[in-house]
Length: 506
Image 1 (cartoon, rainbow, N blue to C red):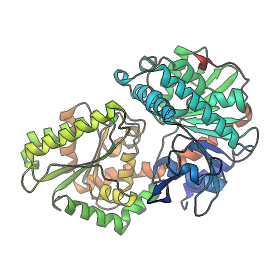
Image 2: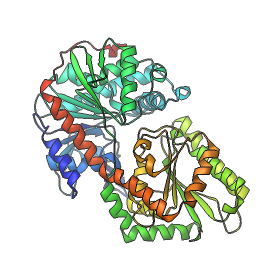
Image 3: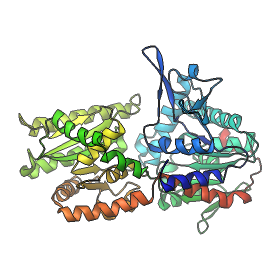
Image 4: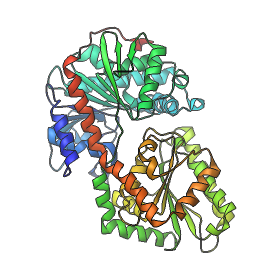
């Protein structure tokens, strides 16, 4: 870590170490071990939250608890524990072992077929199974026990991540370490009461989260939705003025913290010769002429990302404005995700079919309107693609934050492109002044925004990207970490939760 905000994040985490080093608990692990050609290799964090937290934990000698999902993880661990990073160990990774049945119920089941669609306000896709719920409860208990085993003393700082672990804080609080300081960040949107009430175990999820001393969401809107759900579900006292919930003898502070990226590192990658060379090479590989305008989408293949409507907008633009034919290519970089869930596998098929339809309708011998790839790119190569693009089309139908929009902005180190951003992404409030905001359901309006964005004069593009860049660089991932630990430090002295019976047994 070389920038000032990274150093401040480390200081903030170190100031709240309590008894022993801080413990991060997440579904995803920062390092995994895999077999390749009979040899054990290490997969290091490529980006996102794991890449940001890893150097912080290295500096403060923390501990990370996560699912050991690599096929060589067991052999690389000593009783489930491995020192990382491999080349210069500075903290311990404690792995939780899950069998296929547990993964199916906890991860693919309750987490991603109940909580995920509900939090994205897609109640029609929500599916509940009692077996999935039992696996979710069981796995949360495993994570809680692993965090407890990793603790040096009786009152550690434990930081839970995301929707996979909503029950674990209550288990730690009541059964294992009543004096722990528990923090939790929810990386998804928090839905309104009308959506969340669909969950048959809504009360247990809220009960688990309210065992935390500090609970974070991306935006103030999500915090208000959470308060609404608590008031309608539990016998709890919500104080919106102070942002606290009093429940079962304890107090949970609820705050918004907008997740950022390592903007300085992204800009550095985009300036590299490797990034510049890849942008040019990508055009050559896919037959995209240097004078053809490049519109870019980068997404996991998830139904919340709005990819199908985005393709409809590109088709509509080419249909109504023939002058863009042979002058525009839309590149959709997709990453396969949760393919074993039918809704995801069907989406992947539909995207492929729509790409083929548009190319068949408008393509010529020397021009392809849509280039679709699921190839894996390094961070440098992806930064090069962001830099090469004339316009990024980021149009989720619902997104907790959306870091692709911020990655694109940070990569605009040369002649800047234009960002077209869904108003339903958490990043819209921050980046709205520097982007073209759109309703992703309005295909005509998205097509308008693409055309308008491609026609923006250079000076206006520069001004807009400067505004967006100020936000992205001024509120990066290290600020996000530091802000939460500064808040935690201010409330740490006053917390205490008596052990009481939880409604998890429902």
